Image (cartoon, rainbow, N blue to C red; front, top):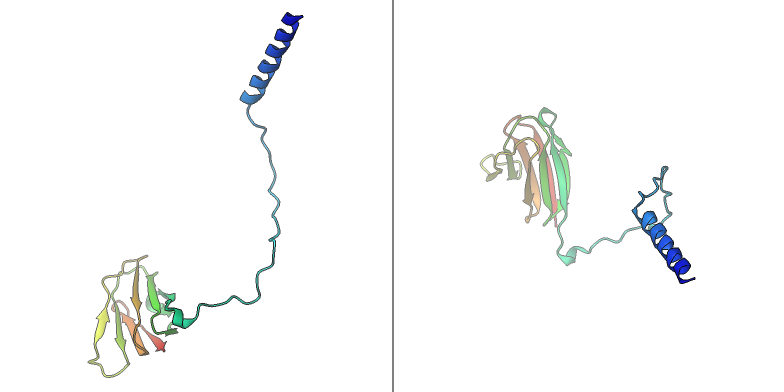
Length: 144
């Protein structure tokens, strides 16, 4: 009787070992999409300006076609990021105001294709910018 019990235990252990070493069953099909637990709020709260956070916005450099967007309005302390999507490497020039011509011009380093240049605007006012490669202009309005 003991031999039969031992034999049965060995058979059970052997079956367990075989089932553990078999490859998992492959499944096909898609995973069902679950619905969100709650719907998104209709209005998302924004961070108050007095919190001191700045916002970054992108401007695409499109070469001869200019910029996208060509004119932009931001708040003081915000950062603009110019992304060079043209095939040429270029320098971006920025100056406050459109006149006089002798106003201080800030020039970026060389912006290669696919690279970017960023600048934070800490002073309110009107700015214009252009590239050395094509001479197309853009406008920035910085508000308080």
